Image 1 (cartoon, rainbow, N blue to C red):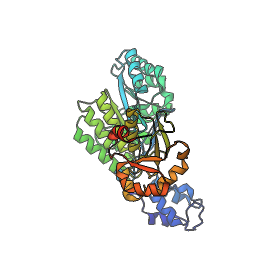
Image 2 (image 1 turned 90 degrees about the horizontal axis):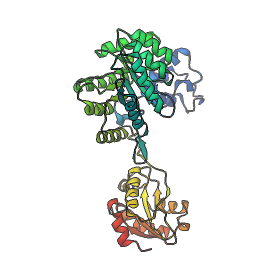
Image 3 (image 1 turned 90 degrees about the vertical axis):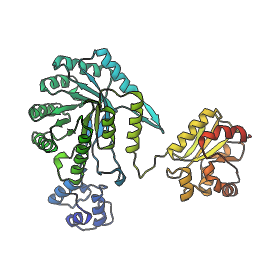
Amino acid sequence: MPLKPLDIYKLLPKKNCKECGDPTCLTFAMKLSGGKAKPEACPYLDDNAKTILGASTRPPVRRIRIGVGERALTVGEELVQFRHEKSFFHEPGIMIAVTDMMPAESIKKEVIFVRDWVLTRIGTDLRLNGIAVRSVSGSPEQFARAVGAVEEVADLPEVLMADDPLVMEAGLSVCGNYRPLIHAARLLQYREMCRLAKKYGCPLAIKADSLDSLAELSGLCVAEGVDHLVLDLSSPNLHALLNASTAVRQHAISRTTPALGYPVCIDTGLGGLSDASLIAGVTKFGSVLICDDLPGASRKALLVLRQNIYTDPQKPIQITPGLYRVGTPGRDSPVLLTVNFSLTFFTLQGYLEASRVPCFMLIVDTEGLSVLTAVASGKLQETVVRDAIGKYDLANEVSHRTLIIPGYSAPLSGRIEEITGWKVLVGPRDAADIAEFLEKEWKP
């Protein structure tokens, strides 16, 4: 179980020396308990305290890195069972599977698609993460050929999937230096798979018939010197999958079973539950999700779902305040005020671009709150607007002194006019109506 702040405080030197960066040892203990500090920050801890605190304060789910370079995938290092408690940090990697029975050109085509496909949503590029190569033939030569085809066209994280260590080594001989995930070690061949994981410095997925067996296998692999593990919970039974993934996270977060404190892998190629298993993997603690196919609509929906879940619920998505241009605005172009909540910004920007009216967008800092929430909380008020006009030198950008504000901020219109000297037009509440509003109301 994780130590409470007072339990941690008892292990500290109680010098209040401030060398850790905190004013008191109790403050430092509270940060350690919340995962916001590391024991190494205290220069006076004895070895026993370092050992106890290290085990208690390190993330209960081990951090694992798959692949190398810019597209490398980091999973694990999670701290909580429920997203609202803190946040989930490392979103699951979605890996598209190819097999060693496919022609090389078909493999390359699939890999290029995964490499290049992108969905941009609220200013963020959402991508698939990598390629899984399945050994179907059982031939080391064919498996190596398939892995080689992947390597020819992309530098992506890979999962090599073969139960036979000889087949696995053939694939690793092609890409082992790029740290693919080895999938998967089982009780009968775990020593051979551990040998390969150590030889090539790769993380290792392990698979067993029950959580007890999985914990036992985890301990055996650690004893062999391999502790960068991923737990395969794949199942054709959705109910069993949800139960297992939830139980693993509970065991990890509570630290009752450290042998289960690793990221989870889910292969949705088992049976006909692909979409449901992927959704379960994203929502219920999956870290590496492997699927044979992901059609366009499902792909977009899954990536948006992943983005929503792995966004910190305590920190709204926001953009940098400033003066933005839509098209090529001139000195007589309209100026529209809005907040720096990303969804508001990109929604309004999209409708302005569709209107084909060149204009300025004056984005003020409301700490990522929407217009209505910012007005209600006082984050959007006349002084904020006045300061933004001055900070971004708006008076020198346009020849007029007219500002269009969102409909939901109408109560501020009079105060904005009084404090800034600018005329205020109250725009529509719905950004979809902005084109019609500009056509009727804007007179340069």
